[in-house]
Length: 278
Image: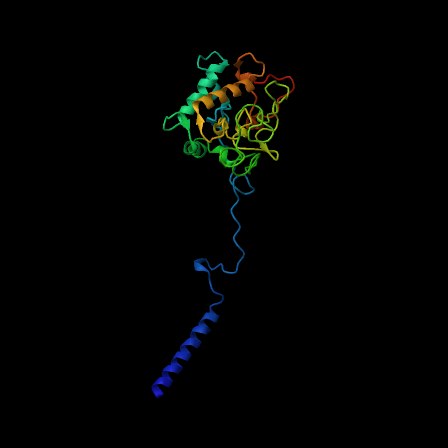
């Protein structure tokens, strides 16, 4: 009996000693930092913010009427020139309709990974995530935040899908027109089909980088809306796009007569009155 009583007393004394030790050591610590109960540490400033590293210039992006991305380093000529030079097969400085269509079909074959003559949903997903991720990433405007577009695009297969480029409505507000440039293809600020590729005043998908207001140019070629694009549909879409850009109807496009993309217009700024288009 005395042994049990002594053991009990010893346990009580040990418990009391542990409690006194905990009180003497102050509040409990949260890991090795000992910052429990303190205000959270401020996040480090990001690029371009006061006290942060300088903002890195981002590559310039152009997305062709068929949906092919072209990129150039900051300070280089805007990459619409690279697309035009490649599409102008005979290098005569004018892009004929046959050359325009051939360039579109060349890119169609590049996206058609299994070469069965049809671009399906899997191939569209690869295009949107691997080939032209700018369509889903959102437009990075000046200041580093989401600019004319925030978050995922309204184009493509994920809601708000663009319709065929017939100039008559498609699947996005206002119908297909030019992408909101400050100097439309006629040179006097005129725009056709206004509002295409815009939602609530925000440019969607590929529209900031494109000549035409198509948020997702590959899916916009799906004329019968079956979520599959055939070569025949791609050919028809290319002819319709050429007709939209050929505003004077002479059957040829010249680099100097093309509209500027919204991103290009932002980079280059407004043109003085009377200054040539390029």
